[in-house]
Length: 85
Image 1: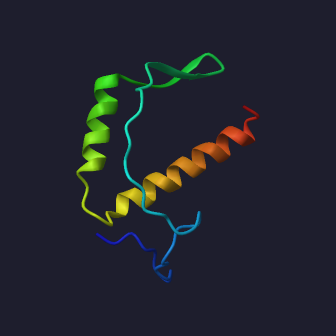
Image 2 (image 1 turned 135 degrees about the horizontal axis):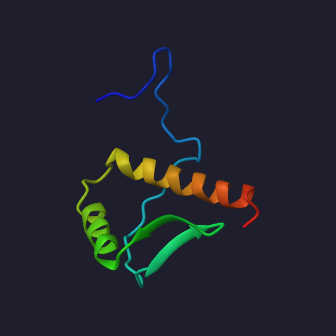
């Protein structure tokens, strides 16, 4: 599957920069819900978080989704800063 738009050049790095390789280290799972102005945004159970961590750990080296996840993390942080939180 190709997601490069017509007339767009394939880049060697994301807009956030070139990703570094890192070892996946588990930490205590978040337990609860994420709310903004009292509205529920998302709630992940510890079991869901463990499943996602297992799936990410099983990805092949260089899996494209890792770049997307990193970009998503940057965008969430930018949104948090813009919202003043």
